[in-house]
Image (cartoon, rainbow, N blue to C red; front, side, top):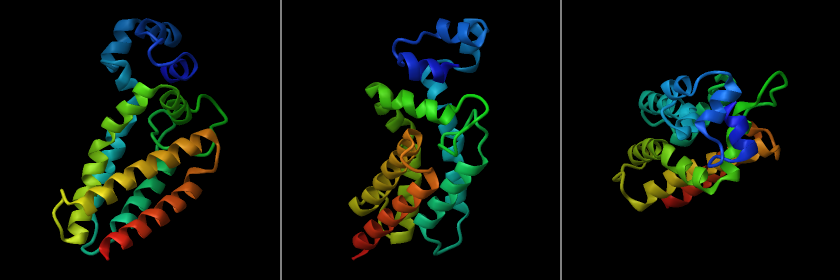
Length: 189
């Protein structure tokens, strides 16, 4: 309900009381599960990023970071339940499409857009650490940070475009991964 209200009315204009009323619960119940409106929007991100961190840590020596990120993104798009999905999947036909509603709310509100960047910072840092290992250079080097930031922003853009209906996420993901691979190859030279 909250994501529907954020997408329809805007993040700032939607109150916790309105969310509670729409969900037919008390405002206290809403704030018990989500201490802030921001938490409602970005709750799905933490678990998804934790799964990427685990996947990156468990990859075989010499395994390509871009391939690992691609495998993670495909799994995320196929396995998450519709309520907690951060990744836009095929259109939901029976009930609200929470991932698309989340993206619509973020696209509508510059403050949410900026907050999203903060919530994906751990993803960027995990990818930077993995690229540093792959490149055998320091994690704070420009090449590593460029590769990690580009990967993150490209994934966010693919998700946003999938939410708008431009193309399915997996098709956009192929373009993202090709772009990042090319950038990584250029950085290695």
